[in-house]
Image 1 (cartoon, rainbow, N blue to C red):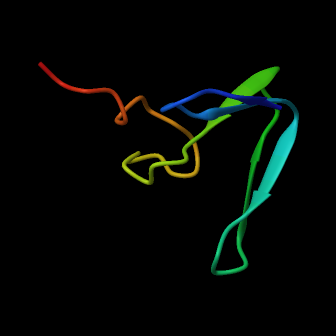
Image 2: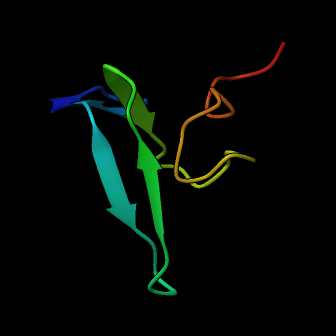
Length: 54
């Protein structure tokens, strides 16, 4: 796992994430970015919504 300041957590896959409601989401990609700001429309996967917009 790699922690990026003001960015997502990068995790080498495959990855299984348990959400607050008890459901799980799975990705078999080589590397995934997990959202830490909760702005992502694809939560728990990061969609770069944390970036400042011009």
